[in-house]
Image 1 (cartoon, rainbow, N blue to C red):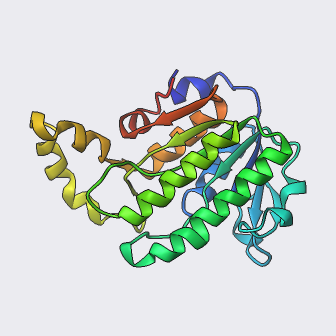
Image 2: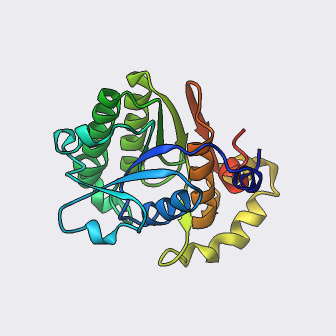
Length: 228
């Protein structure tokens, strides 16, 4: 089912908890979900709640400490985890563990305690020739989600194009060429670029169409927002 048809048919409203709602994707996703009639509770640090979009319920807490917000997750049925180090690079390997991993551990604990039925997580495409520490942490986070027993949708983009993230546009001709060479086609597709709007559409589709078990959404599916 396409994103446009889902929106046009006004899918049943979801109760959604978003961790990372003040970030690059979080702000846009919350705005989209609210516009589509979903009820959103969004986590923010004290003093940062003004960065959350209008229309959502503010939850003040520390994304690294489940005890600061876990009682505020109910009555949500969906948990979207978007917390992570901005502009990942090899130099930030320690932060991937102290922020990305720690926040995911807290989120899984809070979601499990709240009886969340569907967990949505943005991971990263792999394997890839660079960013090994980042890939390793995200892979470990995926395993934690799987071990929790919750149904989950895990999206695996490589690089998201959008405001402030435009330099890889120069690589588009390279991707076009690699996709036409059989030897490199699979890698070019798996590590392809996606746009910010495609990510928001795919996240919305994940929220509105909960998985049964663990569903992996790769780059071609993100581009199409055709998850199902």
